[in-house]
Length: 271
Image (cartoon, rainbow, N blue to C red):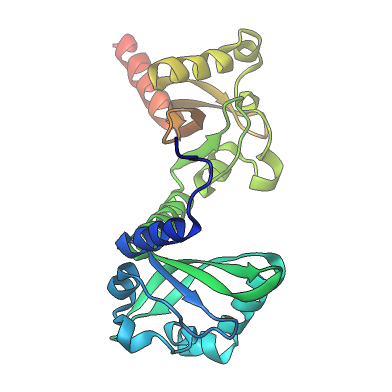
């Protein structure tokens, strides 16, 4: 029977080359020790825009922006790969037609009997992912600005244990605490002593945790001890995996409305 534990090195190398040549989603190519391109796969042609005949023998720095070339980034990448065993980064790269794309790049050194003979370079075009990430960050930034600009509502986040993790302008106006004073404190500080003793804050979080939302009206306490009538909404926040990561809490001061209602009720009783 044939010995399957000893593969023909030539066959293994051929299989590896066939694998690389079949990959179209990744640019996979070899560089010599100076950074000159020695091989080129279909993925590299698709992503970079050059055919093998056009690019083999050229320096890989042509894929970098003018700014990065002037700053010596390509040479630094090879130096890091050679000295640290790998270079891994994201950044702008340039196609044959001059268009830029956001790339995930890995460069590994290739050695023969301990001597550096070149580099293996793998590049993936992650422009879409990068743009989605930037859009999400911009959306988050705008949302933060929106929340910070709201003064009629106290809007803030609390962690799963009830500790305050952020604070908006409206929260400072309604509650009386500056962000530096309140961040890290437990949100039960806003409840009356009677509600704290009755574990109302804990029940609020438990309801939001189980049902996804808690909404109610009741007395709350400002920093100076004054009480106000509040409409409170607490929403449970989960990550993409469904794990609870905290709560979003919105409080509105309805004291004036309550006083008007009580005044109308008292007036009607006098009739």
